[in-house]
Image (cartoon, rainbow, N blue to C red; front, side):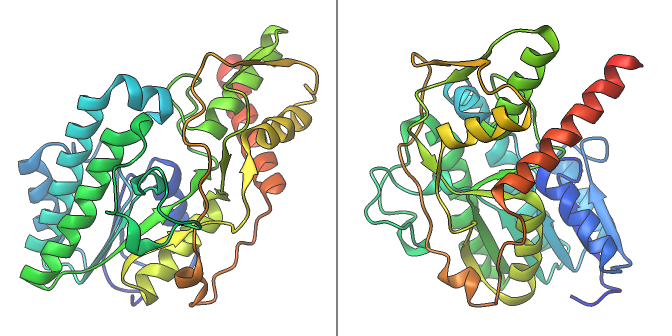
Length: 312
């Protein structure tokens, strides 16, 4: 990507899109077009196609999605599938019609089959079985996006990359206690409990294990992938942590070490997920943020925003 080329970023108000936008600005890219909810309803085909035709981006980072988290995905399977299918279909079609050189799309680790055919998870086994039932509709919509990228390359020579992300976290996430992903949901629960002088309720038993990557590292990885790689590419920290460890870190950061309890009637999700990162590492990528440092920055960002909102 040249500094003067036109770059469109969908989901610019969300976790990954906002961070990619900031990083590209810091790198002196001059022609960015961040697209948020107020710019265009990406579920609407006509509006999305018109947006792409009017801007004609050279490159597209597609980060927009309808994200519900584990409980939200279980409760909104049809809605999650429909909205994500429409968003992804419209964006890829729009990129093709606009003559985009390359599109890099944000996938998710839940596209992998369960039980895992092999570990760590490698990009060439994505379609070798059904995804975990707790996230299957969202995962199948994301799989369809991968299949669409493959088809559009074969039919239209559209260059693409598909970021298979581990569990990402950071500022501008969806901090929803019921429908958010694990880290933002936990941060909201601990913050609310601290403000109310109560005990935070934590779902499951803490045994599930995941790779967690701070969003600033994820944004750097996405840009490296756009510039250097094609096809599906796993990103992650290379370390696996239990949910119990994440809870203990957040409780310590919040100074609430003895102020939480587990609700074992709530779902754990898939028991274990780790990724083969050899493709990402082949371009020299290494995370710069530790888990603890990323959690601290995310906690502080959320507290500052919530405290400001409560005082206004």
